[in-house]
Image (cartoon, rainbow, N blue to C red; front, side, top):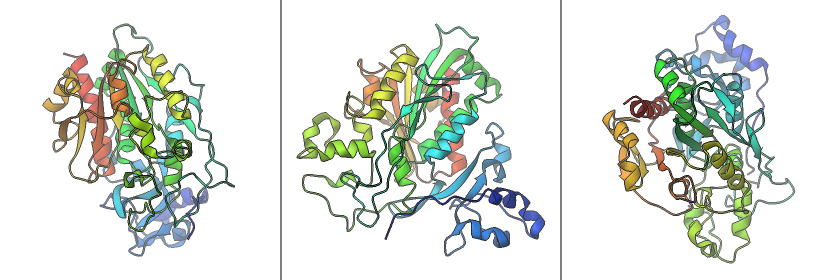
Length: 410
């Protein structure tokens, strides 16, 4: 069995979606437990999409504004994307996959807004650099999925940009870093960050206040190569039936980093030789390294340049957490910060979320950012629950932003 390459949907499909009501039928874009469209009236355009046996759309061009709940989220701009059902450990998730192509499109949609600017080390397209990619004539190192061919990986863009009011004084602004996409299969965090960004660039008076009083430095997809691979594989296998190479550990699966990361671990006699990096390939265990990984060597200097070397707060977006209801976590000092108190006071990002005081390995984004060698920030990890729908993930992102509004307007 080979892995499934991304299907190019004909441009005509977009027009067909818009005109389907003229063909004798109404399409309901109501979001259900499974992301997708369930209306049999698609008729002639059905060939442009992939469907499961129960009629759920698994691929196709959709728009955020087409969902029934769109009017409730007036601060979210329209966003057209290719919908792919996200699967994690064999289960269909409530949110679609957030692909590198989607992230590039979202970043480009922000370019002309007056309060969005490239990171100091990025080009005019808000690209900090590119990953090295992986050739199509060479197997991926330690590729764990015996049932799929090892896919080629083209170089991927690493984005960075800042949201702030350029006419407001810089000296007193709160410095906030937002990063997502450390792990290949964790889409909920990317949708939550999408919602936070959309609120921050909106015309909501509270967003305008935040832009005057804070600078948000955004790095929306920290490990784009692993996400690229993940979105080309229809199902993430469980550990059952997968051989674990000698000297490796079961927790290494599914993919938690790009080929460059796995190639480095593959060069070691035992993964445990990496010490502080956690003893397994994991992009969220290598933030305290230097000279080993293109993503880290690109993002760390960019963050320090954008913040002046220190930040007040950092969010690392993950999820969806496989156990309801999800959580956010930080060190004891971070969980006692004014911002954490503001979140708790407003039941944010959503009322059921758990709040955990927790440390971690030194190479985790959150722990690196907390350290003096990092950004000396109050840093948090957000693990939204897998039960959240796309709408709920977007709203959670907005609520995280409102917590910052509470502390800058005290």
